[in-house]
Image (spheres, each protein chain N blue to C red):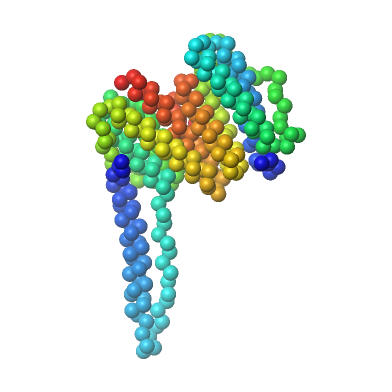
Length: 170
Length: 136
């Protein structure tokens, strides 16, 4: 199931769309300036490709939102889940998120109403995240990024037994 | 493949030395563990022996370090609790070592190192360490 993205992501998507639209609009205006009566020639400007959001960063931010939502729904899980959410914040920060961006993430309400299915959902998200980070490390051409993504993939793999322990004890 | 680049060789040598130490420590820890924990450490000992072999095959034979005569664990093993703590610590230290290998290798060798980092981070938590954002 698709989870709603945190508000920050929506804003970012909007900004990216806006910058692309602005680029297109600028080209239109410049073309309209060009005429046959000796006025200044329009300068052709190629719009720069809009920056693609980093899939891994978006996933980290979404994970933080999922943890915040689970903590809000089940405050008794606050201890372990806050610790893991903080680790995802560190991952997001390492992947380029600012502290303001992280602070503006809104909780994503869990799909399930009971505690064990919510923990199962988090385990599934961690597994998927660890795989995504491992694949990104595998395909990266930048050795520093390979190192960072490998650390993050390992950290996320370690959240799985930790969450299983929590699930076994609730 | 066989790596000859100095940075890659250094990362793989560190991984081999760390795996040699882990194998030694796992054998020692097994003395203090019983039941499921003992079976778990024996399984990990075999896994890490296998990993040691794979890393050794990434280097020219002359670059492979000889096993040390002994290994001083980070904290002395006196009982099951200290054995678990040492295994957790050794597993966490292997995460960064594997990440370094991943950063300096390619294709299947990189995948092997990434997988090793994930296995070690998971094992560290299973031995009782809390998870970390960047396991060390």
